[in-house]
Structures are given as C-alpha cells and as structure tokens.
Image 1: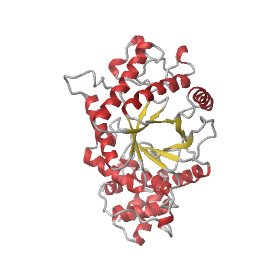
Image 2: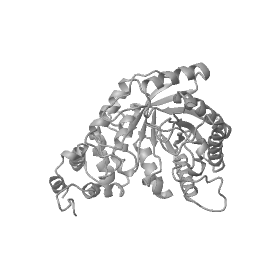
Image 3: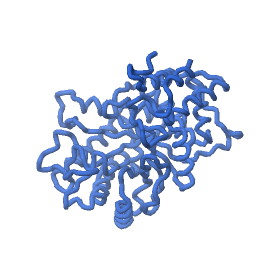
Image 4: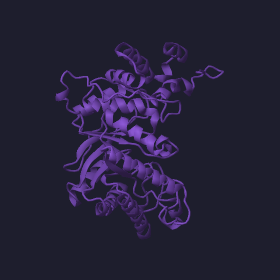
Length: 400
C-alpha cells in the first residue's frame, strides 16, 4: 500500500487504510456502556442532532438509500436522536417550476426526501435546516438580488423586495408540502442567517431582525403542513450584538417562539459564548466535527482523509455540560468524520466518559478487536488528532 508521494509527503491513502475499515462494520448488537450500572445512565445532553447536509458532492449527496440507512443506523446506535438536512440550491433550478425535465434539483431533492424518510423510520426526529433568502439559480433576477459582502454570499435575493419575498415563501411552501405528501413529518425548522444567506441593503438592516421576521413567516407556513413544528436557530457566524438584537425582537414580538439556539463554537475553542438568548430558549451548541484536534494547521472536510478529534470533543462535551447546554448539533460533511460522530454522540449519550473508551468500543464494533487489541487501536487512532505531527511511515508499521 502506498502511503507517500514520491517526495515523501503524506497522502490520503494512509488515512484511507482505516477509512475503508469504517465501511465494513462487524455487527454487534448495541454498545457496551462504560458505566457500572447501565440502568442509571443519563444522557449528558437530551438532544443530540446530526446535521448532515448533502451538497458539494459530499457523501450525503451521493449515498444511495441503503448506504444512508447504514450511516443513520450507526448514528443512532452511538446516541444521535435527531437528523437535519439543508437543501443547498446552488446551481439548481426550481424543481417545482420544471415539470417536463428531470434536472439536478429534482435528483437532489428526491435524495433528501428519501434520507428524511429513512431517518424517520429509524426513529429520528427530522429537522429541516434553512438559510431563508438562498434561492434557485433561475430566481436570481437582477432586480431582486441581495447586496453581498463579507459573511453574505451565494445565490441570494433581497427579502425586502415584495416580489422576491414572495418567491422565498413559495419555495419553502413547496418544500413543506412535498415533504408532507411523501409522508415525512418535520419536527423542527432550524434557521441560519449566514453561509448562503443575508442581505446588506439599507432596507434589510439590521439583517438579523429581517432574518428573524422572514424565518417567522416561513415557520408559520411550515406549521400548516407539519403541525407542532418547532423553531430552532443555528448561531453559525453570529456576532454578539446580533444575539442581543435577535433576543430583543423575539421577546417583543413572539415570546417563547425559539426553542433552542445551537450556538457557534469558533475553530480551536470548546465552549459557546455567553450571549443573550430569547426568554425560554435553551442553550445548545453547533459542534464542528469535520476537523481534528488542531485548529491550526488543520485538515477540514476530508481533504486528506478521515479526521478524529478525541481531545477536542471530549473537552467540548465537558465544557458545554458545565455551561448548562441541553443539546448539541454535530455539523458533518460526510463519512470521513465517522470517528468524530461516534465520539460526540457516545460521550453525549452518557454511555462513555472518555474518548478513549469510545475509540476502543469503535475498534471492537467495526474492526472485531478483542479488549486488548481495542486499546491498541484506540491509541493508534488517537494520535491522528494531531495529524501533521504523525510520522506516516511509523504509523503504517504499527498497522501491520
């Protein structure tokens, strides 16, 4: 097996040596809790959501129904109890406007509906993530375009323009109605203002309030098709002042509307900031599981292969629990972060108290390791938390 390029640089293939094993699980019924009294196990966080957006050609966009079922079955075993996806409309034309041709948008949306249906059958609560003014490419009319810059980019139209706002609302009503027709029942709407969202025009300022108003209208549409639909927020890229303005607006206009806020954790940090939240809103965390322990240098989104963050995620769970967080949402971009899914969900479930315990159980479950070998596997996997400090030749020798 070739682990190095001709000039000696680390390649993806070394990590792939164990990545391949992740896709060949040895079936074991359930996990072995690392607790003396399994009956007394209490989850650290009642809410453990897997946010798995299928886009950019990642695993979730291309996995078939049976493959995704395997992924979700394992996610549930480790402790996830909610599933979320986002319809990234980048390069897609409106699938509900085109009836004669089967295009990219149709294929992507059908795949998402299938994944939601699978998650629902497995017992997950299903959440639809949205960035409200992100629209299809054929809806980006010059007269409707949002003002972009900084955090604001993507296929965006301005919700302060009446015709554009109606397009936005129609888009989401189509999604809600189609999910309902297919038998999927959404539990929550999860909105984010940035990363394919936003408008910096004078009419939309402050954007966070316009975003809140628009999200409210979309939520009300969703409740027509999905009774009892809850409203959650993702704090990705929010600034402290935006949290204050948002909380004030919600408390003034729709007190009690926001169930929970998945607060952003910046790269290299392990806790959320103390920011104002609407009254009654639970503090939760949006946990990026797509990189290892190191924030810099870092491999993110699987460019060099699978990632593992045993130290970072263990400390994250500990810090969030001490900060009275009630839930976590794992931000995942594909199968390359499989170990981190297991670590975050396993620790959050209360079945494990350390990441080493999770890694050892992972080796027993998927690699068929006995107790002694599982500890060796855990040690080998742990060192990849700092991948740029690992000698690939030495690591390859240990695999033999």
